[in-house]
Amino acid sequence: MNKLSNYILFFVSAIYFFLIHLFISQLNSSLSQVGFYFFIPSLFLFTPPLLNKDFSLMLIVLNGFLLDYHCNLPYALNVFLLIWVHLVTKNGLKLNNLNDLRNGRALLLLINFSFFIFLYLLTHFQTTYLNTWNPSKFFSDLLTSTILLFFCLRPHLMILQFLTTRTVLPPSEKTMVKG
Image 1 (cartoon, rainbow, N blue to C red):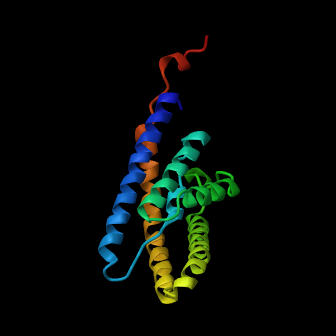
Image 2 (image 1 turned 90 degrees about the vertical axis):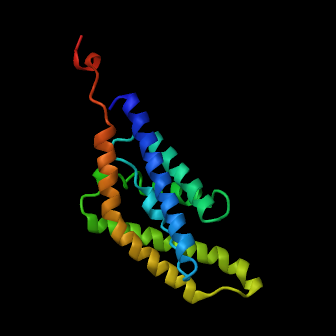
Image 3 (image 1 turned 60 degrees about the vertical axis):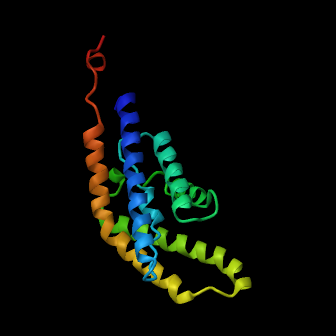
């Protein structure tokens, strides 16, 4: 893949992830009146398969900052967590590395669950002093977010694959001719 295609793929992917953030934040603002809140950080770990390693990491950092902004979380908390998961899985969350979607779903559900537990531990110590923490709300949010993640994963992966196939430019004539 040539350099221009990599830039285009990064830009299109960034716009797509931004639109997902906007959609989820609008959904959260609508459903917060009922008492539901969706937090799906593991959905933002996937990067298009042909995106190089540096651009994948930049896209994950961008997604982390957008998650922090839209979820009103401490600055760079999601960036740190997303980069940590990305490095632990050693870029294993690319689309072409997931052979079985069930294993990928299980991994993402586990990642989403661990993010919730981390946020629980972080907020539990803060709210212990305020005495306002509600465990049933916490676990209902975890359950609804997990259900949403379970159903959104397949379309999300298909859209990323579509973006990859549509934004990759064919090789230029210079690279086809061996000299």
